[in-house]
Structure formats: structure tokens, C-alpha cells
Length: 243
Image (tube, rainbow, N blue to C red):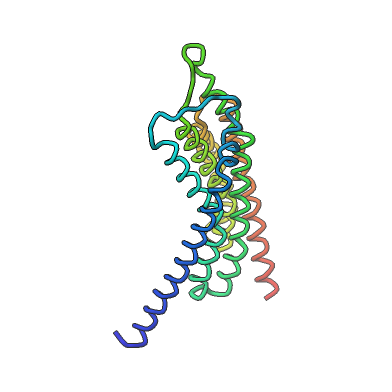
């Protein structure tokens, strides 16, 4: 291997290390900041459960939950910095058109993820939590483990946030010419079926109302994806005609 290639590889490794260190520092800083707001974060996550009394059944459970919640919040708060560092690393290898697409998609993806989290917290988790905590309460006293409940809430929020990325992904693929709005529209019947299957998996209750809300949201996201793909293809055609 020539000296120039060795220097190129070394330069990439040094650049990657630099971006990784900056991202790690950002996660550390946001995690430390989360320590000061731990009680507020826990109260916020406990709110959908109402007046339910939680318990710890292990000696280290409280401390483990403390560290887990703060680290998770730290990573979530540092996502913009991590994303920016990742883009700074890969941007030199992208074409100008690809760079523009990445810069457009990144903030939109973040907004949609936050939208999914908000939707899950205010519209999906409260009825699901109420059903689960009241089920069997006439037979025995329900006192869930705090760590079990918090893990459940955080997994639900993460899953719903990722589901809301559907329009972002489909629009990006349409812009790159990988899929078309006609292809998406032709899969509408399959998506409706998949939406109800996913709703049954995502929703931890057999309540048909909650599952219908989730399935309806997924169907709406597909329709939005189809219209966005159509809009993207129309814009590409206009650009080609002008050029």
C-alpha cells in the first residue's frame, strides 16, 4: 500500500475518532445534566399511571433505574450532536445532490420522531396503562415494579417514535428513485393488513379501540408517504423538463 493511501486511511481513522470523542462528550454532558432532573423525569413517566403505587423489590433496583433513565435521556438529548458529527464524517464522500437530501431529511426525521413520542405519550400510553394496571385489580393488589413500568413506557415511546419515521424513509427512497408513489399505492391493501398486525404487537392490550387508533395512525402515515412520494416525483419531472 502506498504512503498516500496509508495517510488517507489514517486520516479517516483520526477523523472518526474525533467525531466519536465529541459524541461521547455530548452524551456524558447530557447524562450528567439528566441527573439533576431525574425526579422530574420519573414523575413525567409515571403520570399516565395515575395514583398507582410502585415498588422496588431488589437492593440495587433503585440505583440501576436511576442510571438507566439518566443514560437513556442523555443519549436522546445528544442525538442532534451525534447526528451532526456523523454527517460531518460522511459528507465528504457524498455527491452534492446526496448532501442536500441528507440535510433536508435529518431535521425532518428528528421532528417526526418527537411527534411519534408525543402521540404515544398523550394518546396511546394512558389508555393502555390504565387497562393493564386495572386488569385483575379485583383479585389482588396491583403494585408494579418501578423498573418494569419505566422500561415499558420507554420502549413504547421509542417504538412509536420509530414508526413515525415511515414518511421520512419513503420520501427519501422516492427522492433517490428507489421506490415510486405508484408502487406504494399498489401496496395499500397489504399495508392496511400489516398496520393492524403491527398495532396488535405495539399495543400491549387487547382493547380494539387502542389497536384501531394505532392501526389508523399507521394507515394515515402511509397515505402521507404516498402523497409525499408523488410530490417528490412531480418536482423531479419539472426539474428535468426545465433542464
